[in-house]
Each structure stands twice: as C-alpha cells, then as structure tokens.
Length: 257
Image 1 (spheres, rainbow, N blue to C red):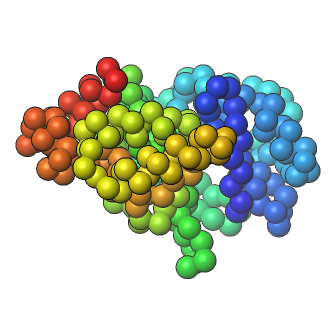
Image 2 (cartoon, one colour):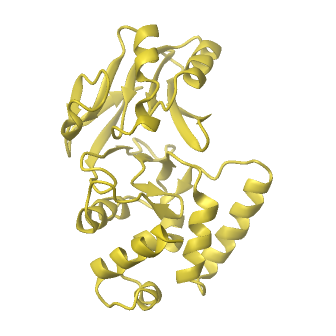
C-alpha cells in the first residue's frame, strides 16, 4: 500500500492509498475532488473507497464528484456521523475494521474535535512495514484539533488511544499546521531540546516548501504538548498537577495563541 499525499484548499492534505498490484485506490478525507481525480488519472487506478474521519466540509467536499466519477465507490464514516457525511454507506465504530490492499485497518473512535470523529490505523503486518495512522483533525503534528463538539475529557481519552500506539507509527494528519503548533509548544515547553530541534527542522522544511506531514508518533510523544499533559514542565506551564486540567488549560492557551 502506497500513501500519496495530495495538497488541497489552503492547508489541507488528502491521502490517496494506492494498491499497485490491483491498481485500485482509496482516499482519506477528500477535501476536494480535483487533486484526487488528477492523481487517479495518472495512476490509471480505480477508486474503490472513501474513508472519511468526520463530517466537516473540508474533509468531505470531494465526495459528491468522486461518487459521480466512480459509481461503485464505497463511502465510510463514523456511525455517529450518520446523516452528516454525503453518500455514507458504512457506519463504523470503535473496533470496526476496514480492508484495503490486503491490509486491515482498525477504526478508533476519537471524539473531541467533533462528537463523531474516527481514525483509521493500519498496523504493520511485517517488520518491513510501518504503521499508518490517519487521524483527521484529532492529532496534528505538534498539536491537536480544537474542541468544536466534544469535551476535554473526550479529547484526552482519544489522544491517549493514539499515545498507546508504537513510536514508529506514521501520523498522517489533515492540515499543515506544524510550524504554528510548534511555536506555541515552545511557549509552554521551552526547555525541551527535542522540541527546539524539531522546530528548527520544521522551519527549514517550510522555508523550502516541503511538507511536515507525515510525522512519527515517537516524535509527537517527545514534543507535542497535547500528548504530554502528565509531564512536569507542561503541568507547571498550566499551573496544575492534574492531567485533565493541564490539558484543558493548554488547549485554552492554544485557542488564544
């Protein structure tokens, strides 16, 4: 399974999964159809699945046109999003599984950004593979999503699920927010040398027009304040010894940053 990152809108990423043996493809969160159709045309591949993480328009905006071009495509989304994702045919819950390119993905229910958000995690089947996490707007490189429909309690529980995955997991988040996220992180975790190094690397990458996605989950655990609510430096920045309160205060600080 190849993962192809496509740029869309102002800062969105769409992820095209390609099985070169069968020459079929699936797409995660098609913000718009045109970049997907262009790449499918280049690959001469058939689109068989749309994997939506949540209902926001910048994640499902391409569904209609893709369904028109590929009438047999199957549209997946969370069970709690029923009625909110155009064309949805499969309603997924925590522990559901989806199949593509002879790989099986676990569906992880991760409310917080929205009440119905899900993620897709493809664990490695053998030592030569990496795990692939398609996390939508729940986890970002260096940050996490705003709480539009969910609560801090839900979000910290959701992020805890990601924190339990292997460090080698590639994190495919849906927006290029990394530089600003790391700028905020430095205001609450300034002595973190891993974070300082990561910020310098991200700044160089963006100055050359390079993407910072995917990131590695191991790097997120070392540098992302929203996965580090139990670390003394972050608790000190939030003036709290309680993990949930620390997370809640950090999220509020980021909202005002």
